[in-house]
Length: 265
Image (cartoon, rainbow, N blue to C red; front, side, top):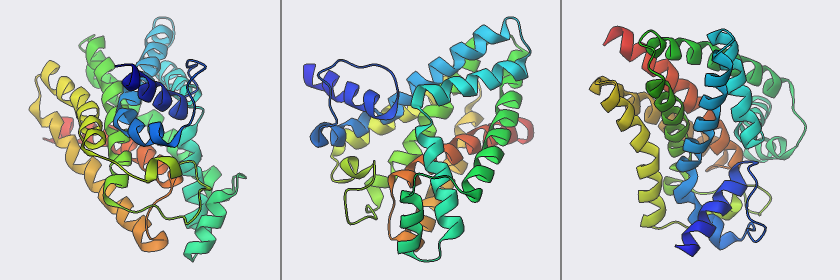
């Protein structure tokens, strides 16, 4: 139990800005095992984001509360995944060879592709999340809204981290933030990731009495498949930035799929 707590806090420290015990470090062995808890981090980030939404919705409009919910998630992770998304936009937008793409993504400065990508990402996320929340606010059911938040964050993180189970790390050196988690994984990492990644969605389906919600899995993992194939084609694998971008895109696809399934199926 003590070792599992250490692994969990390693994961929490690596993927968020939440304070952890002082004895927790970025030890490669624990970072490898921390993969199993990555979708569970989605539970935490989603809960904080929901709490911000709920508190601000008490005296502000739903749309304004959604903005603060997004801000809360960004502050919690330190824009960890958004930074990866911006780097991928810059790298794949401005590079035409593997070496050039990796070099651009390694640069900490944000370019035009990254800036434009982030603006569009936040606009789309704001609009889709607002409409998704509206599906449940008409019933005044905050439990469903809570499950919506943690489902989107957990499932998108599962989609991202699952890439390391099927693809190789692209860089030859240890210059990327994802290198420690890219070395190895066992059935514990795989089963833990899928358990924490899928459970909130099944809970959402159960409490809203709509099995069709589970169909969200199809577009989310199709998106994950095509993104992973795209990364493989251009850079022969993935980097930490690719995982961050996958998480962000799959989160948007989650909201988009929910709206489509709810209205047309």
